[in-house]
Length: 113
Length: 116
Image (cartoon, rainbow over all chains, first blue to last red; front, side):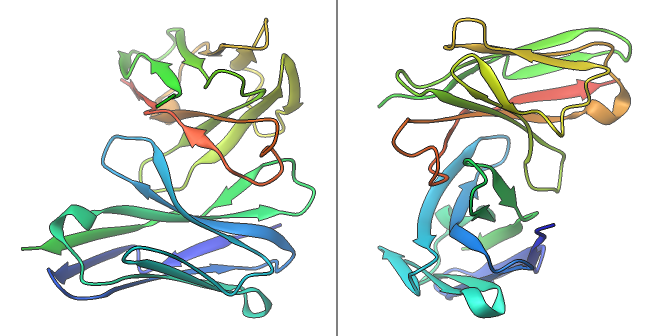
């Protein structure tokens, strides 16, 4: 059974620092991996989706890498801002799972001014 | 921009009472998902519909939970009777026919349930 782990569970950084969020998964037979953002009491917004054949994906200040063989993904957020404060979740899609995502528990990020 | 609509946003109930949540997916999205997210945890799939048919309900506690999507559009998730451990955020998501196998889901704002 696929298990997705995110460490640390919480992170606090001063504004301007780069953020590094980690995600690991136990079964490398994935179709893709996504990073989501969740604001308190809200739903999930997809940030980046990396296909299993890709090594990284970039969008603005966000960059996500994927090392399928070692079961790891990292989300980098450059020059963090207070508006980046949120919980970040990673989710993997197993092959032949018909769209069923397996989520990690998330990393809660606080960026202090 | 099209959104997944959910109601109510918040529900407080006493244990043993019945509760219901409603979800209206993005127009044209044939696949609909109900996820449960307990505080501090990631979302867990409860039930998945393809049109009006259930594709996966393996994690749905069928003794107290039920879900339906009668006309293949909007959906209702019901809990009867509610228990303290049901306190969670209930998230609805949908995906279009072209992306159902890619994990590209659109989530609603969720319904927060508190059971006293």
